[in-house]
Amino acid sequence: MQYNMLDNEERATKDFDGSDNDNTKLVIIFCTKNSESTIESVITRVKQSRYDPDVIVVDGFSTDNTVKIAKELEKTIVIEQPVKKFPGKGIAMRAGLEEVLFKKYSNNNKSIKNNIADDNKTNNKYDLALFLDSDIKNLSREWVDLLVEPIFKEGYDMTRGYYDRHPRDGAVTKLIAKPMLEIFFPEAPHFQQPLSGEICANMKVWSTLLSYNNRNKTPDGWGIDIWFLIETLMNGFKIKEVYMGYKDHTSLDAYKEEVGNLRIMAEQVSFTILDEAVKHNRFDNYKNVIL
Image (cartoon, rainbow, N blue to C red):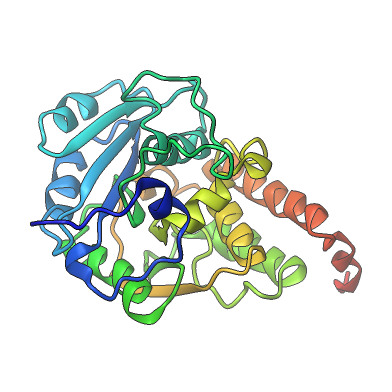
C-alpha cells in the first residue's frame, strides 16, 4: 500500500481529514502486563484491519512470555514501561504516545522534549493512534474499523468503545465514575463506559493531551482513562462512543468474585475526577448533591 506521507509536524497538529482512508496511517498501542495468553491473537487480529496498522507494545515488566511473543510478530515495536510502578497504566499509555510522536524509547533518546508547540522534530508519521486492551479474548479486526471510521467519516476527534459485559463487571464505572461525572462534569454522564480502554483519536488530540502543560499532571495509574475523557471534552474535541458488542477479557477473573480487589482502581478514578473538578472549577458542584 502506498502512502502520501504528510510532513511529520503537520500530522501531529493538523485537523484530521480522512476523506481518503487508503492514505490513513494508523498505529495501535497495547499496554501489557503478563498477557501471554492473548497477546499474539490480539496483534494478529488487528493487523487484519483494512487500515494495515503498525503496532506498539508497551510492556509493564511482564514475568511471563508476553515480550518474547510480541517481538516475534511483524510490524510490532516492543518497548518497556519507563517507570517500574504498579498500577502504571497511565505511565504506559503516555510512553506509547511518546513513542509514536518522538520515537523516544526505541531510539533510546530520553532527552527529547515533549512539547509539540516547541518541538518541530517530532517523528510522528501517523494520523490516528488507537489504544486497545491486550487481554481481550474476543477482539476482532472489526473493532479497529468501528473505532476508526467515525473519525474519518463523521468528523469526530475521538472514539471510545462500549460493550456488553458480565453483570459483575464494571463496578467502578457503575458506582464511582458515572455518579461522580454526573455531579462534576454533566457533559459526560451519557457515556456508557467512561473507563473504556478502547480509545482512538487523531494526533491533534493526542499531542494536545500530551503537551507540556498537561504532561506532568497525567495520572500514572488507573485514572488515565477518565482523565483522557474529561480533558478531551474540556479541550473542545468531539467524542463518539461506539458499540463494540460483547467484551470478554481475562482481567475480569481477578475481581469477578470479589469486587473489593478493585479498591485501588476505585480510589484512583475517584481522586482523578476530584482533581479534574478542582482544575476546571467544578468542585463546588458537590453542594448540589442531596445528602
